[in-house]
Length: 136
Image (cartoon, rainbow, N blue to C red; front, side, top):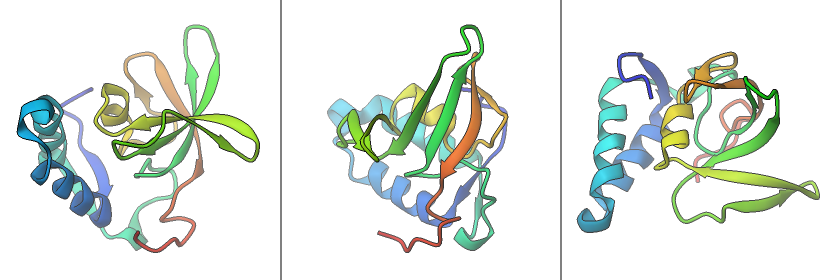
């Protein structure tokens, strides 16, 4: 994760991620909780209605491409505790937890950005804010 870059997070995602850190079990979650806190500290907070549709937010479905092999995968950025693999429209889809290195690298980024030094965000297939979904 590039710690010197600013990212944009929706106000709702900031609230939920702050709650996640506050209520985390300090023993087993200390490592990722500190990383989420650092991410929140460098984020620019944007009202839900003003977040751009090409930004990765929580629960976004994103098409990623490995720049070396050109392989593509569709993932959903989720909160901890979600299953790793689900079905979407009958096709397998992978969930990436926000507390994983990949999840922390994805959130707040936009289409075209390079994450984890070799994976490009190709397309935001679904973003709750752009779809007008209410907070859940």
